Image (cartoon, rainbow, N blue to C red; front, top):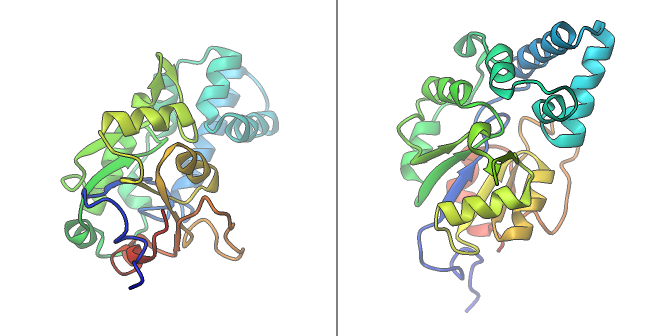
Length: 233
């Protein structure tokens, strides 16, 4: 008898680690533009550079460190908490775009659900409330909690991801990262997560990446209940 990938795994309930932006909602629709604009404003204002240079630094630090904040901390001694407050201070609900049925999905999906986002906690809480998910997640880890030896280590840090496995007491193969970022999934797979790539918001108009580190590809998290039987280990 052929054993399905999901059924061959441990019988312990899964631990789902969900990314936020472009995974649980369509941040590319309007929210990313709002955040990027405020980050560029912040760099321009606090580093006393022109708009073009500020935008260049914002994008460069994001690509190099995984978060603009880390580059500003390392090279310009910027206060991360001040930066996060300033750059995420806007009406989240007015810009939010998401599919219906997320709360029902979380209620039906077996196992624990955890938020793991490089976004700041206050912003993440606003998004979750607007989505009706704030009571569906047993733990929330925003960028403020992503520290290893007191140093910020957001995704795709392998050290941080190992720390999350230990903190949630998830055995190898029990934890599943659901994310739109291939870099995050590659690191997660390397330390023992199973992985699911969400393609519907980040990969419109281009083919999603392929690799053995991606255990499952879905367009929407709403596809998880019927697609999770195909999740490779």
